[in-house]
Length: 546
Image 1: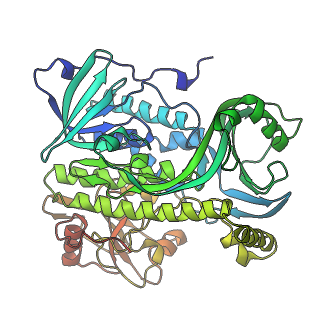
Image 2: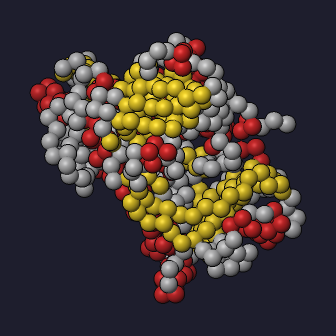
């Protein structure tokens, strides 16, 4: 049977650009048809910005690679038109269990409160994810949107000018030149674009190796995240088990630093390790095997003139905590609305510097948590190991110790505290919805299946809760339309958005982060906040977020 990662989805076709007398210029070119590049392209096309995606492959990725997708990225994918398909196909989970030696020390629930459309996490093989994104591209093409994927098209040279970016693209018919007003580099951790521009990462490479094995098996393990410290089947190391769709399970086994990677990937060495973990009665087949080394690094800047880096091309973290693809989707969600305003002449080009600022803040937060996870999982000294094991022993009976256990502190959305785009705050409202924070979902009413984030969309909005406001506010060509809700019979909405206030007015950004909030309507304050949120009176971009 042919599997989806063996089938070309966007095979090479000669384009009209290759026969043009002079290089054709496009508004935006995205390099990389992985999850982050496709998400960026879909977002652009949905906002009527023509986009071309270049990739040296013609099919989805082989192997599971990224498998854990968190609630916030699923909400982003809802706006891109494929979130529901992801959740329907994926394995939903909220519960995780932590084991030390042979005993379970505790378990946790990542979404203990009700009133959310999406689960805390789903597990889904990356090739399924990419297939949903490619299908969405085809849907947009059928709607007449100007979005194109060019397979077997490898970028071999980049020349970044003040007014545009020139590319050389190698194809089965030979090379050709093409230009872009803006280039988004989503070409992975080894980013050829980054290398061609003479740019590099700063950060840490961890001295450890982990075996990833995707196995097909019929097992009755529950749909949970299981993590072991020092298990009997992998003494002195760690292990992780996750369920995926189609009877595929992800297993991570820590191997240590001084190993022969090619030897360890051989089936005759992998299979005995898996049998020791799963038991002699579990039958399984290997689908994919890889060995990886941790890296927690990022570029010093994500914006270089008209070249913008996103996803793994901009930053790398360890896979524990599911921060790779999840943070990359938040990169594009932050970037595309800003790029649209700049391209449309509705915001100064300096607005793109806030992409750099806010997402570097997000990357640093992810790198910090990922580094802490790695240090806890792989102690670098005997004293560190004694401390780690003591914390695990205490966590079995004492709740105070459980937050200290770090088996991969799982991905949470970034709050842009201190962003120059943030407007006024209201101290009587909940901290979770302060300016800079992602809007938490909530039911629209107590007896409805409608959800708040579905009503907010991907444009500036005025969210009015138990407050009368005008139907819209327009400033310099940008209009924020009103979404009106009531907290009657809706305690979740009140708890998440009002707190002690009697009513609330929120200015929401197109990426559904809070820009400003008040407990009453103030027309002039809202107008100033829109100007701030679009970068029209932004200053101090040289600094960082707190």
